[in-house]
Structure formats: structure tokens, C-alpha cells
Length: 159
Image 1 (cartoon, rainbow, N blue to C red):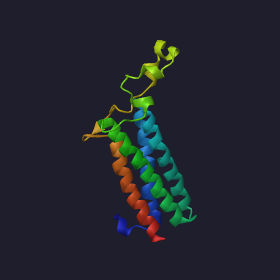
Image 2: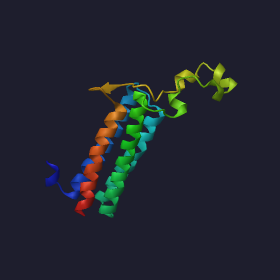
Image 3: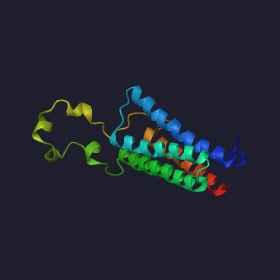
Image 4: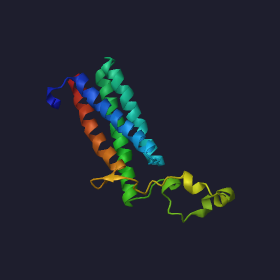
């Protein structure tokens, strides 16, 4: 079914369903051993919000406003994904908690410096754990979420 042939409710289902698929995929990758970094986790929250907003819109509660807020949720995760992609590519610095080059030991406590477990608990945001067609998971999240933004906005304009 092509977008211009879809009803508002169907578009909302596609956009919210897309977030559901991306969120499920993130948990599947985690189950397969690809532990998420801090920014990966940040990208999940707006998808969760978009799923809930989709259910609210499908229920007929303020569908136009809900669709605009759904677009904002999708745009938020796309923005985080874009920022994360830039960190992975080394275009800019990421959060120091997960993308440090290891040069700033002054921020660690004595217990942290002596701990042998610290390396196992921190997943680096500036390392690409998996890619497909040259794009990392964060980049795919950005690209697909921007598609969802367009679908949410089209649904909002139909009300």
C-alpha cells in the first residue's frame, strides 16, 4: 500500500509500528551480544514514546496533535542517532562517560583505577559495534526515523 492511499490511522500504525520494529531490533541485537552504549539507550526512549503515541492516536484521542508529537519523538531519536553517528565517525566529541580516549584519568577515583571490572561495564559510544551497507546502527536509526517523521507529519496533516 502506498502512503497516499493510506488513511491517517494506517499511517500512524506504520510510523508507530516502525518504531516498534526498531526498538525490538535493538533488543534483539542486545540479546545477540551487542551491548548498547549510553547513546544507544538514549535513542530507545523516543521510540517507546512514539509507540505509545501511536496507540493513543489509533484510539482516536486528539489524532492530529498526537501525530505531531509522534513526529517530534521520531525527530528526537533521529537527532540523537545523527549525533551518535558523528561521534562514531570522529566528527565531534561524544559524552565523556562513553567516548573518552582514555586520556583523562583525573576523573576516575582510586577505586575505579584499581578495578578490573570497569572495562567490562563501559560500552564505548565512539566505536561501531555493527554496520550494514557501511552504516552503523545509529545511522540506520537516524535514516529510518526520518522516514517515520515524514509519515507522522503526513498523518497529522490529514486530520
